[in-house]
Image 1: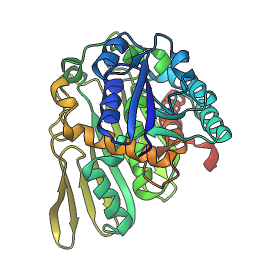
Image 2: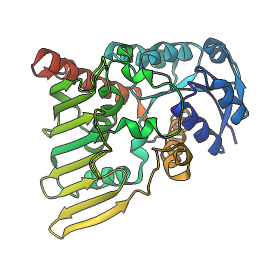
Image 3: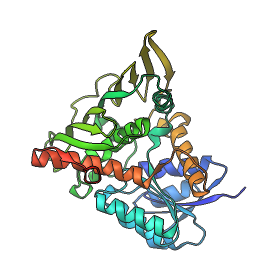
Length: 350
C-alpha cells in the first residue's frame, strides 16, 4: 500500500488533531512538524521529525502533503510556499482572510496540478452527512429557509486543558471571530443544497471588553436556490451556551422540516410527524482528555481519507479550494455589510 507522507505546520490544538488523524490511517505517514512553541513536543509524541524552520519542512523530498493549522492570516503564504515546493495542501478553515488570497491559492494549485483542500470536517459528522442525504433525496422538498445558531462559550475551551496561547483570537490580522465560526455553516448549506450565497446583510459587533475584533454577528444570507438563511455567531457568551444550541440548524422545506444538531440528534418532520433519524455520539471537543478520542477523531480521519482520495484522483466529499473561498467570501461580505450598513451582492453573482 502506498502511503501519503505528511508534514504539519502548526503545533496547537488543530496541529495535534491532524497528527492524530494521520497516525490512525493505514495509508498515511507522519514525517515532520514545524511551527509553534509546542512543535518539538508534538514531534516527540508522534515519533516524527521536528523542523525549526517551516521552509525547511516544505523543501523536504520525503513529504507529499502538508496540513496547515496556523493562525488564519498565515495560511496564504504557507500554502503558496507548500504548493511551490510541490506539496498537496489541506488548510484548516478559513482558507484565508481575503477572497483575493483564496484566488491566489486556488490558481497556484491549479498551475501546479496539486490538490488544495480546506478543513470542513463537519461534512463528516454523522448527523450532517445524514441531513445532506435527506435533503438531496428530497425528504423535505425544496429548502426555503434556514435558521443557524452558533453561540460559543470561549471559557469552556480555554479551561479545557489544551494549553497554548489563544491571542490569535484577538489578533486583527486574523480579522474576526466570524471567520473562525461561520465558514462551517456556510459550507454545510452549500453542500446540502448545491446553492451559492448571492446576497448578504449583517450586523457585526464587539461585545467583549478589551477585544479589538468582531466577536458577535447576526447575518442574513440569500442563496442562488432562493433559500434565505439567518445566522447567529458569537463567542461573547457570559456562561456556557443555551442547551443544544452550540451549533444548530432549523431547516424549513416545502414539504417537511429538519432539526439538525451536529452534536446531538437529527430530527425530521413530515406528514408522519417528528422522528429521530440519527444521533451523533458525544464529541467531547471541550476537554484535552476527550478531544482525541474516537468520536471526535472520526470526522478528521474521514476528512483526511477523502483528502488522500482527492490526491489520488478519486471522487469524495473533501472541501475544495473553491468551497473554502465561498466560506471566506460570505464571511467577509457579512463584515462589509455591517461596516457599510447595506446589502452586499457577491461579485460573481451580480
